[in-house]
Length: 314
Image (cartoon, rainbow, N blue to C red; front, side):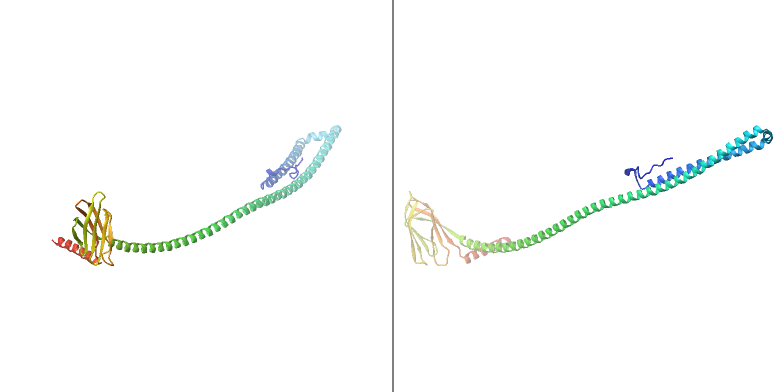
């Protein structure tokens, strides 16, 4: 009976941690089958002996007759010798079979040990390979994780820097806006003062007039206008302005219509403006812009308010 050595004929892809035990079970099964065969042969031999004994016991008379016959006795002796030789041969075969079974058990035990050792070796190699692969993957993941953490740290630092810059920019913008706002307020106050002054300058009283040639009229207190001649074709006129407080005369020579004549009545006041709007053969017409005094304007404003209040009460 031949036994295949798994160490000489093996397939690494077919090995697993459960195969040595399966092979051991198969070897034990074969050994049990051999012992069952041996026991069966022994049972057959015992049955033959028992059958012969029964036959000899039931046929005592025939045996006595046989022993009386020399030829039959010789034949029986030969048969007994043959049976004894067969029994000896069977006993030798039984011993040889026992030895073979013993050798087979030794081989099976050896093969099982070698198979188990080989399986353990393969398991260790597989474990080492898996451990190496896991270490390699883990090192790669660790490297990536460290890279991600470093990138996150850099991004956080960058964000903190950007946030600090934004705070500085916001603070600077607020300060600049505050300065601009204060400047705007100062400019607004200055503009307000300028507008107030300008409104005071523009707040003038219009005095309309119409004079014939050779006529003299006082347009405002201390201001007298005299018309001496007209030129209808060119819309020009001749005359004189007499300023009593300044003790001077402003001569109007060949003065064009619609052209304002500016003059000062007294120091510290705003200038007056004389404008002639219409020139005929016998007369001229126009107006005089006189600055309104603050007291007079305030009195006029108070008078207007008083009039409004009185009308409201009515």
